[in-house]
Image (cartoon, rainbow, N blue to C red; front, side, top):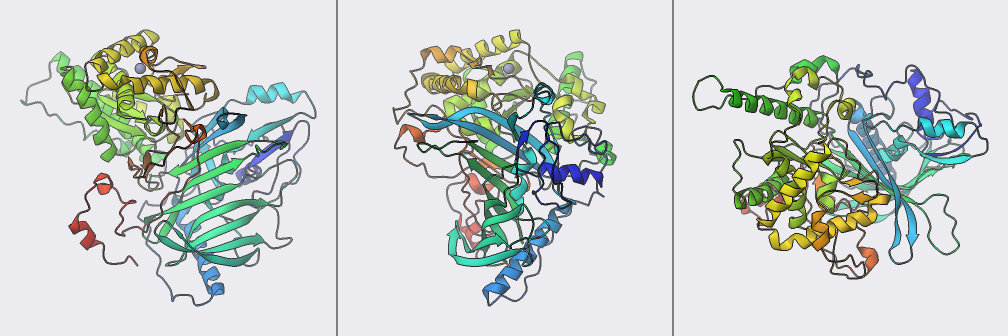
Length: 615
Ligand SMILES: [Zn+2]
């Protein structure tokens, strides 16, 4: 497959591409060793059309999405050598199980600069969203097409210019230590100690590549759970470092979301040294999230059968024909259902769940106190991505996971939701064209080209005004300082967080470095004071919403608040490392099951069910 060659070059984690140099050592391995030193876009290979929506012909025979069967456990190992053999075997089992999967992968990166008071803070940011194909190598297709052609063109005429070019695929490389050669022929394994990660007891091993085992080998540490001997965490980098490239350091976490397997879910990357005298070639923090393992492969053949119209039921009380207005509303509902279903199938929208109940309660609080009476109830759904955005289609309000993450309190959440509720109340209905099912026929990766819910500026202004009026009548009326403070904090960071503030389906909350959403709330809010430790204007990313990488369900994180001891602890809108609490699926804790996670009272019934250890 000719596509392989290019993908191989793309596997470097970061290329410091020297202009006017040619590609050097391409190696026909699938290791991240090969380095593209050319500044030209990697030669566009005609078969490499992954960026194009047309490329949706199934690249491999779409496997039926049957739930993977948990592997049979063999006899328990008695020596560390046997443990190594076991986890090497389990790793191969994981690679094989994931071959039929095409999860969504998102990387959000903040380049850092040092602020004397706040420490390293974001200077600018980057966002990548794609779909991985793990069938033969690690491949990806992107939802967002970053137009770097101009930049490349501008640099093309110069020589000896270096520019940092992030390769999105690189951030996902550490879903496996070494996809093809993770074995004793290529690596030395040294047992370190036992250690608990969350509820899971692990054996810790240092992994070093054998001399002359090739370029781009994993170098670091793995944590192996001591029941089935699956790797649950990898931490390290790749070695040796090739010329003109740079391998990130990564910390990669897996979750036991289905019996017998731990699937890659989070990867944290960080580079940079802010000690005195250090020279940073690069300094960044990045979070990579992987989800949608259970999504159907995007095969063109099943597009038509997957369009669901059965959810649009005729629930009118009588069997009469629809009046013109009733017909219009049904039409809008059909569009709404189509969009919600399509976004869910593209891995961008969480299925309806517990978090929606919380969001709906906030919406209801605003509706009731404002006597809002709509013909159909307002529903809410969570967009699974990080960029801060909201939009509405029909009577469904969609809010992004990233936005829910950073909102500091319920009144800020009410602020975000009220803007979309205002659009609905004012009848700013967009998207009725999506009632035509042919408009749902596109590849998942082309979602952003085919769907859009951006309002004209006049409607934006009207919605802001209506929303503020409604908030002032709501239970949140006395707490709007929090919402105003959030917008002020956003305003201080907006210039550095362009990617985070670029909405892909709805309207942007800022225009360049200036927040434009609900600005009326900012005037009455207190001043931002980073040194005031009890003033929390915005939270770091990832602090609130927990996403199940297998089935895309979302729930609120259950974490104990940690006391803030300095201004540097606040980290508004910032990327932080992952430390998920690891649990085994089906055990009593239940944090990685869904549904009842939000309940606080432990129920005797569920405890009794879970006393049997999962084998
Ligand atoms: Zn709007």
